Structure formats: C-alpha cells, structure tokens
Length: 312
Image 1: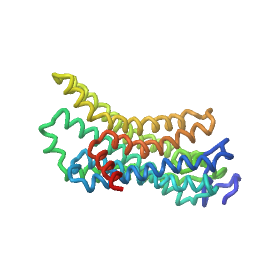
Image 2 (image 1 turned 60 degrees about the horizontal axis):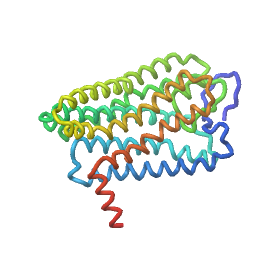
Image 3 (image 1 turned 135 degrees about the vertical axis):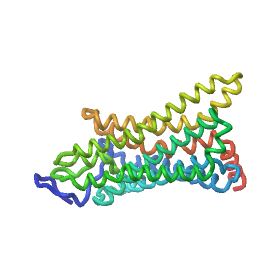
C-alpha cells in the first residue's frame, strides 16, 4: 500500500472509507443495509422472473420494466457486497484495477438505467398521445433494439473514464471518501491536472442523464397536455394513473443523482458524512424502491406474487 509522500505514483490500491464519525456503529449499520440489499435482489429478481414467465406481460412496457430490474440487480451487486465486507470485516483496501472496474460499472449502469427510464417515458407518451400507432411502432423487436442501444450508450459514454484516471498521477493520500469507487472521488486524489476528467465527466453526465431528464420532462408535458384534453374526469384519472409508477421511479433515480452531484461540486464545506449518505441513497434507493413501486402498481405482478405466496 503506498504511503503518502510527494512523489508521483500510480497506486496499487485505494482505501475505502464511508462512515466518518460512525466507526463504532459500523458493524450494526451493515444489517439494515444488508436487509435493503436482499429486498432489492429478491424484488428485482422476482420482476425479471415474472415478466419472463407470464406471457400476458410480454409487452414493451413490461420488457422495459424487466430491463430496469436487471440493471438494478447488476448495479446493487457491483457495490453492496464490497460495501458490506468493509462494514462487517473492515476490508478497506481495494485494488486499483478492481476500483476502476467498479467505477465504470456504477457510472455506465446508471447511464443505462437513465436511458431505460427515458424509453419507458416514450412508451407512456405513445400509449396516451398516439394509442393507434403505439402497437405498430413499439413492437417487441423494437423494444429489444432500444434495450441494446441503452446498453451500448451507457458503456460507450463512460468507457473513457477509466482511461482518463489511468493518465493521472497520485502523490498524496489514497483514501476514498466512500465505501465504493466513484470517478469524482478518485480524480480528486490526483496531484496532476484533472481538467480533462472534469470536462469529460460533466459533458457525459449532461449528454446522458441531463438530456434524458429533459426529454422525460418534455414527454410528461405532452402527456399532461393530452390528458387534460380528455372529456371525462374518469378518463383523465385512468390515463394518468398508468404513469404514476414511472414518475415515482424517475424521482427515485434523479433526485439522489442531482443531490450527489451538487454535494460533490459545491459541498466542500459540508461534513464528509453528508457526501457518504447522499452517495449511499443514490446507489440504494432505485434498486430498493423500483420493484416495490411497480409491484404495488402493476396488477399482474401483484397477483403472481400473491399466488406464489399462497402456494408456498
């Protein structure tokens, strides 16, 4: 493990932190986090299984939901086991290569999730504003192509991040502020210029998450406009009720992301615990809430889960 000095080096490992001021309670803090992780794994796994096996759910909206659940499974699994090993066993050291891989997975999978949320917003827009064209445009093959495009987009936009980190030199502390690896966290440890990292990281965030958020907002503006033109109140409520689950999931994804970005960019005077809490919420909230929200709002998924429980 490199020791802090004034000589440039490429660290062989980083040291994870993540519970400043809570070292005594760290062991017990892992139990609720582990419970949340298990709920996320079981919930998202159930969504993937039900959509795959229930033929009545073989429609674009549910295929997008299945993609969302698969991304949440991958995102939580790429971070939570390492986080729990730190909290329970004090395994703080992570190799340089493993840290870069985890960083890439966190950022690229978040971009994939953002793209899937945009696709789901487009699905709702087509279903409500152009119902006659919805089935002919959003076919199952088209849905599969959108899923592949979402994956490629996330990977390609954030593939340069590990390469930008590799060009940096480190000459001081190798202690990260989270119990997982983030691009902005690693680059702040460098003693050479990080201008390229800052510019590209901000550009990628704006072109992926920022653009997606803007297009989702535009979709809902058009949806609300179309819903308000419906003649009866019952039709308006029925049309908009199909969007409630998606709106909740969008808020659960973007609000922590915005909060974490603001804290990292402008929260230099805040206590480290604030950054840690915002980071954990950003990673844990979407995988935990998404299956709960869609399970509660989707009649077919709810019935299938109840049927499984009654038979066991």
